[in-house]
Length: 194
Ligand SMILES: [Zn+2]
Image (cartoon, rainbow, N blue to C red; front, top):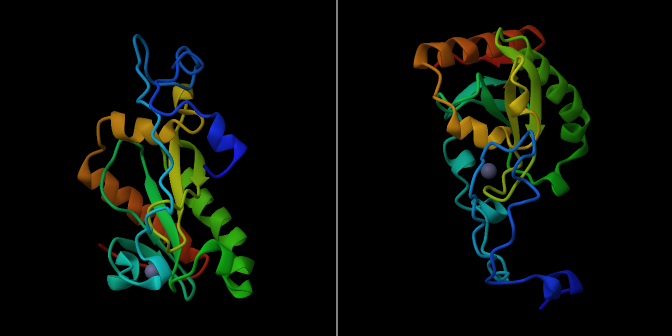
């Protein structure tokens, strides 16, 4: 086993859900059962597009893109429970740790622009963004629109709520994507119509 941290953990056992049940941000109640804790998998299996090979983003670079400039592109996939969900990626295959200075320099301003464009959608109070990076190696940030007044959707469980809430209608999804792309294009880059 790799570390004291790993040696302490109760593999095969079910941990108690009690720390989460009843928390104002936790979307489940009642008899919630935690899945048994799996042993670590080492070495870890490769992510999608590891070392730039067979990267689904690079293989189909225009797919789901609603806005792009010379460095970045924003993708929106399909209607889901939140008013808007998107990912921001560099147009060239990089990880966070090898993102070149010309991209790190524009990452902050681009996050700010995307967050503002999403927050300006009518039903939205705030834009959350996250970098998980366990699925695809191609660097990507998730943006999630937190609907106005819906205080249960604060925090990290917003990703679960996106799956739980009824998907928004397709025409509303398209209109939201258009509004976000148009707003971004006003500050540079181009909106892509779908
Ligand atoms: Zn890639």
